Length: 402
Image (cartoon, rainbow, N blue to C red; front, side):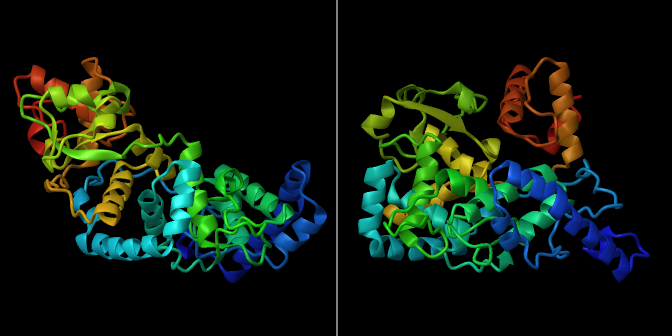
């Protein structure tokens, strides 16, 4: 991260920042930690030999200028197709099926306890840490302290640093053993320390919540996370569907839920040709069209949005759902293809959002990103303008929507 320091910066200037860092730990952080019940013994063990990690991303050293917000002219919408790389999904699914068989008894017990299907748990395990095989080379206290001292999200990392100290204080793990990612995520589920404290469980009965070395603890902790965030036992995550041309794509969003039977009555059916399960027909579902009419279309359940609590991204949740289906049923890629929706400039989408807001539409956050409220508002505007709704911004609309 040398570029973040002034051009004339020398080793001495880094040494000066290091002195500030150590003073901050001994004063500011130690005081807050003690107010939160952290002992001197834990503080000494946690910060012994800790120094700044200058190789981490998103650092803002003292005296430097934080990076500008993302350029609003930047192209933002690369095609989602790259996210669903078939080779990667096939590899994860094959390994996931093998490990599901190996840990079948544990997964059955986890599902009985938490209500979360084993294939969902294994899919998240695979996506987050390659089924626990990903290297976690960073001392977590050093990462969290560095980022709490000089990153673009100092307050968030400060809170996580205090949470990590609680883990050490509580005897969950020693500071030396607490290894994680460059972002401070820990163990096989890739929990931040606050998530560890809230969701991690001892499922193998050895008295420790060990998400680094224990597969049962790791898998059960993922399931407990989803269960506490509202997973509905006995329900699927969602279904790829075909939405007929006569059914508006502008009905998307978690706030427009209705019984899946009502969606089916409007002509929406599963692309597989199979009917919706009986228990799903009676329950609520939501339309999801992440690329508008230019990609796969879905009816999702509330469990889809629970998966998003793990990582707040529609594509992430779809990846987990698709991978889980491959693991459980041997299914493959989504049947519809992701269209070429990767050429819009963020500044152009921002201009469309402002124009829609001026006409009374609710687009959510006006930020140049096409979330579901922007997509459905655009679809409504297209219909009122005599256009076939696509529910996604494209260059042909720039001149018309001003």
